[in-house]
Image (cartoon, rainbow, N blue to C red; front, side):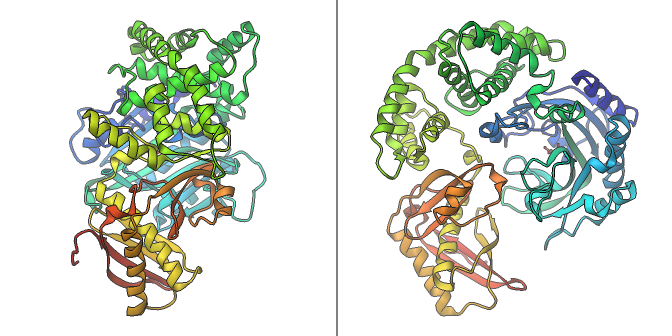
Length: 594
Ligand code: SER
């Protein structure tokens, strides 16, 4: 099946079922200021999911171009992409779970002819706030799925959204294609990343609105928001092992191979994939109707980061000439029919690539030499300090993620917290006010929430010191006001224990300790004694935040730079959460009562 056939089949299927087709929106969301890019088909629909009337009705379908920055480091594997097309259908207060699941099942098994045995689905298992999704499970069974094809998971897997800090969200049911490989362990399931299951479609039942204070309110209407990854489905339907084998990547891949051959050079498979994938993303970003320009902030920064990464990978193969335009031209030709903006903006795309190449090429060689010099001098801690990372950024235009990638190839980690500090100092001085966006969405998080996040790590560490290392985290929830932390422990804590825990956290605050961040593989993180979730949820490399003497945890961040920023920590409440699980609520800074 070709990509075009799949796009058409999807849209027609839903049109026949009363849906109205809407055009792909810009990669810069208009109706959703909480995110940098359009990461899913639902972004242009946010106001309508919240209850406004959509001019095209209550049932919609689209093919939406999307960019996801969270997956940049995964690019090069078989399935993860920064740019992709999402096939989606929506019910705005119209049909709900049963009908949505029924249509998805029909489309997959009847139109795409996927045998039902190949499907595996996940369903929300329920928690203290929202019950187990019996309707979804029952509907899947009524369609003919067996019990062993249905997996139940909590919020980490089966709750979607909001995409930014606020917005519509709800439980979901995800549909996976089972590649038929043997299970990797007894716990093997769609949530594990061993490669047996590939996620192809997500049906979100949007019933809630997360507000800026962190609370959830019920929406006026019950919506359905679904999203299916075009590239992944195409890969599966054609029996390929990775997205780069599909017709979507073949032309650009052929061009790259041709360039490599002309230059009589070699490039690793991973580098080739990164270049092909980023070429497509960069062409779509530059060629968007809103013409994104490389810069040092926001979307422009992500674009710059992608282009500079491509340039370095090409340079690794000794390709010194600017070949970016040649590669981008292939994408314009290939997608120009469907996405006319690419053709309209072709000149702009080429000009920008030329400009960015010339700008970076000037400093790249020198920067690489300096980076090598810094790496050679690094001590046993194998940590590049924030000042040097900032120098590479400021003098040679190396985005921090670029430096992290270079360093990791040498087994070196980068003090990202230190870099951020230097960066902020610089910003203050130059009064530019520009903002670097970091993976994990630092800019999305309130300052107070960031502080509470670090306080949670200190609390977790103090609990282990006072109650023993058997204590482990069972849940955490942070609002702008307070932190809530659930942990395994069989009885009520005594006043003495609580005082001691509070004292330890305040001691760490008063010592003005720098919070360190390093990127380690899961294995290294484990070995270093870091606590946290060790399944491969975050991909192979995880961030480990250390507050020396008090805490070492795997975590996506963000965190404060120094513990002194928390001022003072106070436990407000200790209570039972469920059997064997205790809950602490605490505040920092100004003392508040609940
Ligand atoms: N918004 C959901 C997702 O991105 C469904 O499209 O997975």
